[in-house]
Image 1: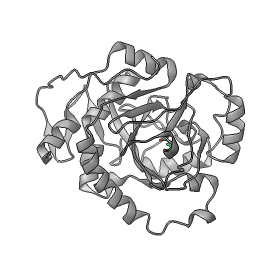
Image 2: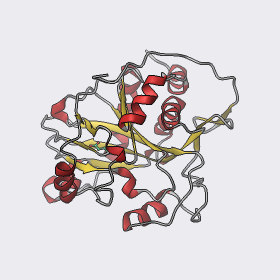
Image 3: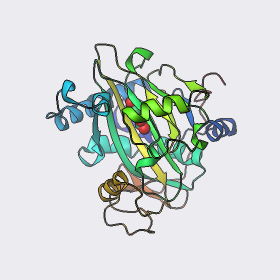
Length: 301
Ligand SMILES: O=C(O)CCC(=O)C(=O)O
């Protein structure tokens, strides 16, 4: 049985990526890595996160009254501000360092987290690229998608369009029936990476990488936690659409256009430039112990 200290150690200890894995991410706009977190740790945080989701989504609109986007999942954001236990998970340095290394940053801040629970019978997540929503100056943005159970195809695992992060068409589309129809057609010549996730496997995708997920045809919820990281030096830009206006107010409160997105909602989680808070309360100034772990090569590589 894992105690809290073991959990902190796992959440914070580094997993170093190979040059080949970083290259794969740069070429394809995403990477799936196995054995990033242990099933034991994830099972414990699954309970914590699920309790939080149940509490915060108690007044969700019934499925039949929702839009296609609404049917895709229950979406509960910035859980780290609601629960100390979730904060421990979201403030873990292991995932943050992987995100930072993948995008070649010196460190990362949180943009926001979100639990995405695709209910039993939940619909598809339409094709989209996240960066359409984000009023930020560069594409140094990475989402860690962390399933909290084995996720077979029937549950709607996240699927990626390889190399689509350089594709310009459809970048102005919000998640909708229209984005699904237009992008399905526009991306038809790209290779689709759609495969099951094992518990412990985590994917990382960039802001402009087009992705979707199938419906959940099982009778169990697809429980997933996500953390969106940004370059620690990321600056706010003038919002380009209504969703970016909403995002800048919600996730970057008080930040001036042109300023570093360093509000109290955007703490640095991992940095090679400075010491960071450990689980939000102590400063971690210990020398960095390197653990080189085999996190597995992406499928098909
Ligand atoms: O979980 C899903 O179905 C979609 C996730 C997604 O679009 C994202 O994390 O950017």
